[in-house]
Image (tube, rainbow over all chains, first blue to last red; front, side, top):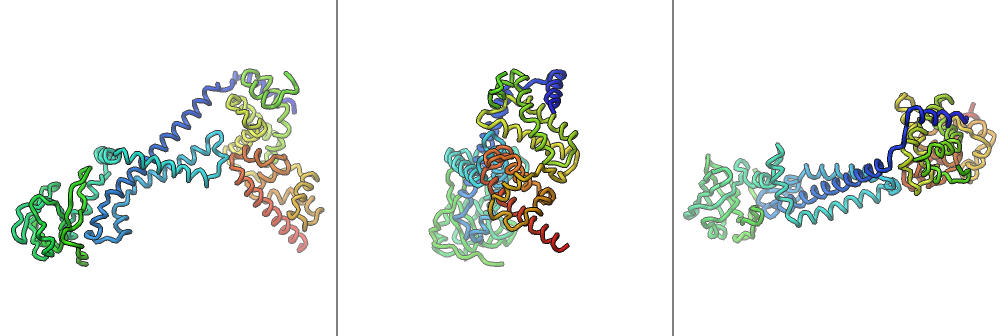
Amino acid sequence: MTDISDKVLGKIAEENIAPRPRWHFIAQNVILWSSGMIFLVIGALAVSMMIFVFQNGAWEIRHALGYGWFGHAMKIFPLLWFVTFVLFILIARWAVSHTKKGYKYPLRFVVPIIIFASILLGFSIHLFGVSKPVDDGFGRRLPGYATLDARRDHLINRPTVGRIAGVVKSPEGTQFTLFDQKRDITWTVDADDVPDASQVHIVEGQFVLVVGDKIGEQEFHADDIHFMEEVKDGFLRGKKNPGGPLKEPKKP
Amino acid sequence: MSAEASDEQLAIRAGSDPQAFGVLMMRYQDKLMRYIIRKSSVPPEIAEDVLQESFIKAYQNINSFDADLSFSSWMYRIVHNTTISHWRKENIRPEGNQATVDDAFLAKIVDEGDLVADIDQDFLRQNIDRILRELPEKYREVLVLKYIDDKNYTEISDILKKPMGTVATLLHRAKAQFKKQCEKSQDVEIFN
């Protein structure tokens, strides 16, 4: 069988086959590890975006919107970012198993470590306030991407299911107008059935969420009102209802 | 070229000296040839082509050899991957192991105690090739590496690029499957 080694050496000489230089493998390794770092950052970004969405998911007015905890969570669930996160985990797992020594480590240790690292980094990214600019950037550039602002607005402002939101203008007795700045619509709201304790707090300039029924093109009958305030990042957040707990929304 | 130089020393030298690589080929060609034949049902001429291709790949990638790994495991891994690529290219599945299964293998596998204690040794000796061929590839592979090629768990882990825990599990299941196949075959033979 000595001719196999002779044949191979002959072929090496004949075809000028040369070993790949060491720097080729060093570069390969650098690329693999760099890609790994990039995947880690993408995964962490996905985590920070999920934190951002859940943190600003209008939980404080969940009751007014008529959802249970699970239902509300499903309404605001950031599917794109969750899928990105899962994809990252799979790619990172593949990358680790292809490093020089990565295959020695069982997946049941590697995957939790990757998940933990990206969650930790994701929290840090979120604390730096990167999430909203990223959300806005995706909203501007990615067709079909709904920013959190747009999703909150869709959640809160749905006249056909009995919810409108905006700024109180010209309150007069149990009537007031509500200006929806985003849509440039002015509603006439009849707040006669709203509990007295809430009515006294309907003042000019107050942001409110009105729950009730649409009774005309731009007319709304209010069963209850939820008071809101503008917080950082420009979101409207529900504040403690000075009129006491909200009534359960009317079931259709 | 010192005949006493270790495989790893020769591998590091081979990056700039093809003759060092030649020495390595001489040391490994016989056992790797047997390994290729055991892994697949190809005739020796095809096995030789696969081995040549493996050696060329090894030479081209010799500068990636890391002395943290044994040269033996590194080379076996290349041959393992080249053999699988060959199957995919030729669109064939390995039909069996023409295992050089001898009494030494039998003794090793019987030494496992509870494994084949109840099986008639003569029956086993006559049918072991067929029984091995009937096992799924992932089980046959680890049994062959462990009991015919005498690889330890670390070496099998490095060759197959699987964690040691996975190798241990595969071997455990392979032995259980092997025992089950032996018992089934023996029962069929008695019935016939």
